[in-house]
Each structure stands twice: as structure tokens, then as C-alpha cells.
Length: 114
Length: 117
Image (tube, rainbow over all chains, first blue to last red; front, side, top):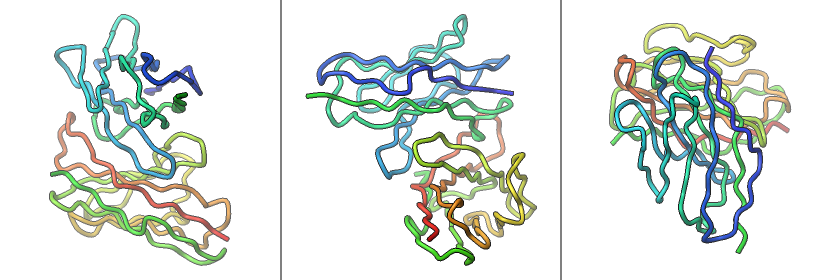
């Protein structure tokens, strides 16, 4: 079965600093990968996704992620974090070769200090 | 496009009562909808897959008699939490996809926060 690991439960960065959130997945074939952001009490917002092609994916709000098959990773990055980026970030993988039924990681809570 | 709407966004109910949550695809026909549950400060766990016109498929450990799912039309799926108890308090979120292709992604609603008192 597919699984997703987000090793960092909580990360604190200073505003303006760079950010990398880690995500490792377990799936035999090429996975469908997603990053979502969730603000407190809110729903999910899709940041970016990888289906195929270029392994460096650009998303909204200045985020990008890189698919590395050799490392089974799909880490999320942002060069300069803004205070409004403070939220919970979830990595997800499509189950059994679909892009719609998802398995989520446990999430990483990002705190931004001013 | 691809807007999914959930209603209500928040609901408080008394223990022992039932609560219905609606998930609507506003600008597309959803052949399949998915229901997830998120406990406080935890991740999202898939509860069930709902296909229009057929019975829902529940994930292991999810009580189908407790969480009734109906997908009677291509734009509406409902989740009814029956005889709700405080432990059912959670954030419920649906997603919907249009076509059945493997690379068709699903779009999420804004979620419903259920509090059972």
C-alpha cells in the first residue's frame, strides 16, 4: 500500500528565510504527488502537484517541489517565507495508480517568526 | 472551474442525533466522491469512496451503518453521521472527481467541522 512520510512534525523559520519541507513516499510505480496547505480551521488548498514530466514543479504562492525518484522524495521548497505561510502542510500520494484517492502524510506545521 | 462545495461548514449537534453533510460539485459532474475525516491536529484519513448510483465503498475500520453515504446524483453526495457521539467530533472533508481516468485528480470541498455535545 502507498504511504507518505513527513518526518518533520513542526518547523519554525524566520520570515524571509528559505524553507524546505520533506516528504517521502512509498509506491512502486510513478506516483501522483500533491502538496496541500491548510490554515487553522480551514479546508485544503492545493499548492502543486506532480503527475509526470519535468521533475521540478512550480506551484502557487511561490512554492516549488522536486520529484526525486531515486530518493522517493517530493520535497516542498520556498526561497523566502512570508508570515502568512504559517499553516499546516500535507503531502499526499495517489493510491493504486489514481490521482484522486489520496493517502496523506501526517503533516508539518510551519511556524514563521518575525 | 472545478468547484466543490460542502454544507454546512460548521455544525453542532446533540449526542444521539444524526447530522447530514452535503458535498456538491458546482461546475462539473462528479462520478466519484471521496469522504475524509480529520481529527484535531491529525492528518486526513479516507473514510469511503462514493460512486454515483451505487453503494459506497468503506475503508477498513469505518462503520458503514454509522456513516451513511448517498451519492444519488452526479453533483451531490451526502454523509450522514447517525447517532452521533462526542468521539465523532471531527473535521469532515469531501473531494470529487469528474472522470474515471487514472490521472484525473479530485477537488476538495472546504470541509465541515462537526461538534457533538
